[in-house]
Length: 241
Image 1 (cartoon, one colour):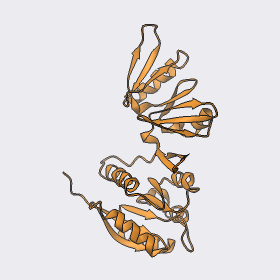
Image 2 (cartoon, rainbow, N blue to C red):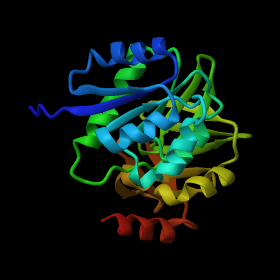
Image 3 (spheres, helix red, strand yellow):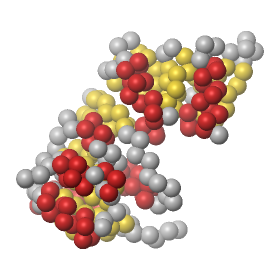
Image 4 (tube, rainbow, N blue to C red):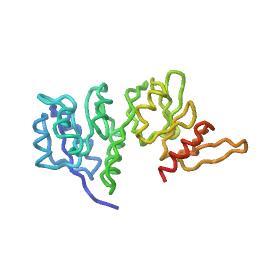
């Protein structure tokens, strides 16, 4: 088992919040805190001197907020960014800034563990990190950030889009057409008029007795492919080979 450790910078103007991140990280020994910052100017300096693998970045800090830090540094020169904030309204902007994740305080140990696991997968990969973005949905329990690479398929549901990740689904108040325009470059393609499929989730295409196609996904879900969409769908699948 790999024992590689990853360096972490914590940026938050509240000492209690910085302690909270340290306490959550204590359960994940592969992450080592190398520094703490109270404002954006300190973050920029620390990025140059400490070269962390990950920065837990507060959105609202004195003088320069987290988004301005990324703008000045440029996303390409940033380490992995996990936003940590008390406000959920910045989530979409955070993923536009190529953040890996967005945590809303107070953060549960379970939610933090999921983020830590994603960080380990990305940092431990020899391939460049894929920050394809995410969808932000509102549930009865609060805001949920669903990374696009975890979405299997999406179906139209009246004025909503239903997002499927394995056996779990979320409702997003957005039309399928608008959503398709937004995530098309992230590897999603129409299977039929009311369904988008993530191409990398497709495991095989089968032909039913009536001649219709069905895409079988890694989750076990089966999504029909309309005859009108066959050619484009098959061509998209070939590009993934």
